[in-house]
Image 1 (cartoon, rainbow, N blue to C red):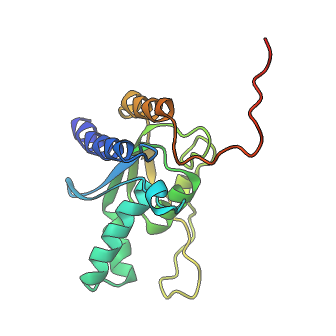
Image 2 (tube, rainbow, N blue to C red):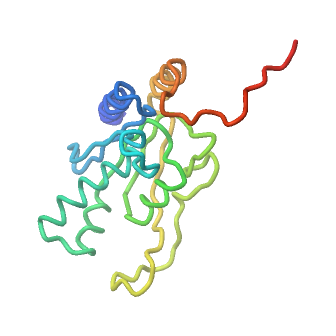
Length: 184
C-alpha cells in the first residue's frame, strides 16, 4: 500500500494546485508500470466548462500524446487497460462512465462522493458490462468496468474540501432570491 499512498500524495498535490487556483480541490494521476504518465486537476471554473474534471484533464493529456504517436483506437484501449488512476475524490457519474468506457484497469480514490459518486456512493458504474466491444466504431462504446478501491488518504482529501468551502466559492452562482435565515 506504500505505492498507493505515494501516488495518492501526487494526486493530493494536484488537488492543492486546484485549490490555489480557486477550483474545487480534486486532483488525479494516471500510472502505468509504476510511473505517473499524466496528471490533472479540476479546471471547471477556469474554463467555464463543467466537464473539465481532474480525470478528464488527465485523460485528454494522454489521448493527445497517444494520438501524436499514431496509436489507433485499439492501441489506445490497450494502453488504458494497463493504467491505474489515483484521484482524491470518488469519480462522479460522468467520470466513472468515461473511465469504464476507456477500460482503465483500476481506480483508487480518497473520499467518497456522496452527491455524485459513480463508484458505489450513488451508482456503481465501475462494474461495467460483460458484452464485447465493437472497435470498428459502428456501435457506441460499452463500459468495460474497472476495479475500485476507496478510502486512501480520505481525511486529507476532505480537509482540502473544507478549506475550499470555508473560503467560499467566488465562482458559485448568486442566488436569485434572497436567502432566508430561519428564525430561532
